[in-house]
Length: 294
Image (tube, rainbow, N blue to C red; front, side, top):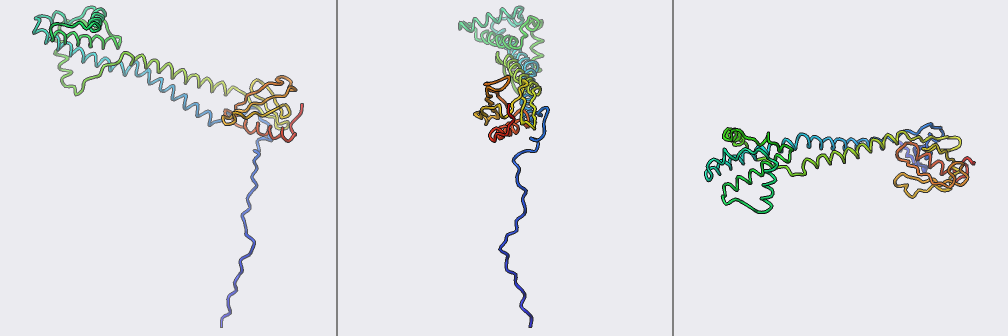
């Protein structure tokens, strides 16, 4: 007969893995530091934003110098075709007008005259001639928008040859170009100015912050902030954290501080690494009364 197997009662003690005690106090607080390093998170965040603004401003330059002028040039070319077709049609009502009036010697004065006519509502008794004048206005205005309203662009030596060349080009086109607005090109220059100003300001701000010096003296738990202001825990009346959510603390100094007694020192703890830990260590030392006294 086989003997019954032994059964082991579960022990009442529960074995737990030993966990190291968490140390909330960083080790670097016991090491003096001549200059706090830049917070890489802050640095790369601002760098990406600055590059975005500089790049977007560059797109504004491209649009102002290349994209929009090319679009405006294309519309002016199409509008010229429409104008010559209308002038050719008007020739059936007023023989010789096509050869006689297609070329424009003084386009600036002619555009001003057409604008005045449109503003006053004065038209032509001939429908075909009215269409001719309307298309002439669109052509000249298109040239003005791209800064090409010059006699060299509006003088047409042989209207029939010009019309045939434009017909060959545009009758095969699948779409008609849209005209530029008067503000299209200037707005791109404005975009460039605004974006490059913001991007340049951000890059300059980054350089200024990189030049700032925060240092830490571990034995006395003292911090030196930009302006070569050295502050020990015992010299701080209050660690004002009213803007702590924005990583900013105000150190209200006691009257006994040798150079800035009674003043409030603003410290941004986000731009430089380690500074936040130094400030919190100073606060702990001040509360425990272990800070260096002056």
